[in-house]
Amino acid sequence: MITMENIVRDGHPALREVAEEVQLPASDEEKQHLADMIEFVKNSQNPELAEKYQLRPGVGLAAPQTDVKKRMIAVHAEDAKGTLYSYALFNPKIVSHSVERSYLTSGEGCLSVDEPIPGYVPRYARIRVKGTTLEGEQIDIRLKGFPAIVFQHEIDHLNGIMFYDHIDKENPFKEPDNAIAIDR
Image (cartoon, rainbow, N blue to C red; front, side, top):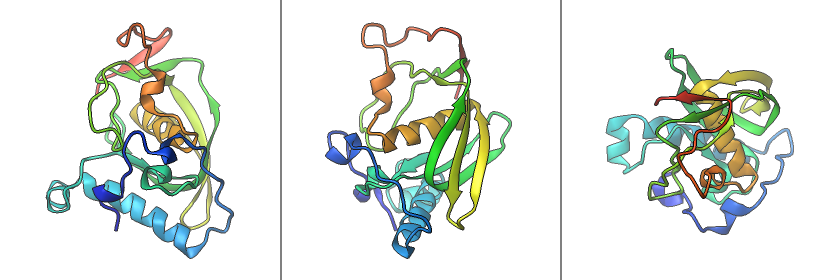
């Protein structure tokens, strides 16, 4: 089971390294770690379990945040219509994206960053992601809105990029050009 103690914090070298591809089929150890990651994200959203295990609520987790330098992410997030996007993926990759951008009006947060970092984080409004599920199935999903932002945030972790790297240093609340504002 993954707890907050397993989450590395900002400044840890694992957060700035490019994670390695998972050789498929994944090992039992890799499958177990990815299953633990999605379980952590789901548990963190359950108020009783979050309190019991002292979990900060999260919508996604990338393996480097647990000091495992492999290309694995877990996402459990709803879009504006309440549709649940729950995925545990090996080797997720953005294969195409829109020109149009989007950003969260509330800014982004991260389980590895303890303090709030204000500012808008420009992301692609729509993305297409390919990856491999825990069961070894190849998937190809189209995402927009909040789930698209979450996937981009987690995939950034696999490339050693933190969300605040995208914030305009001169003007953190400068609205990105050609962008949709998403309230969350």
